[in-house]
Image: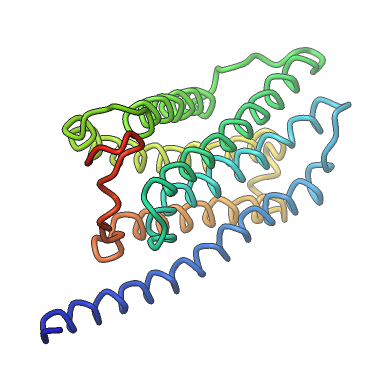
Length: 250
């Protein structure tokens, strides 16, 4: 092994170590975010249930936080986190996680629409900026899921096509995650304004705690974007990565 190869290998180990440390912090922050949303709902919003419209709605922020923030983050970090696995397995895991996200998003959407429908009087749907951004974010996510499945998991797709599509898939995936963070923060803020009204100006505990959740979302999102865009953290290609499901070279 040459001196240059030793230095390169040493740098790779150093970058993997730095990534692992940040990943641990990222997991702690992400789980803290989920716990904070759960605590907020239990202690300030009346908990969870399926009878009262206001209680039904409480499933919405929890499922969206778990799916569109925590699982989405882990999905886009998956390639860098489990870099020793075969790329074919990583692609499958990536798609499976996205499948779970879709289920949670559908449940969260049901909670929102059901709570509006069963309120007396019924609450209109899709009138706020938060809801509009939510529709855009979900539509983009579903488009990414379908296009990614067809482009990277469907047998027989040409390697040239995959290479051409990949940069756009990565860009829109990260952009979609950032949009999910922004939509969530806007949603938390909107909810606080609705339930606290003028009391929000008096620095109530719920208002302060809700603001903390919003800041935690932004910090978590920034940390994830840093980790997924830092070139030194990128997974190094393996010889078997070129083999497609059809057996052809990628």
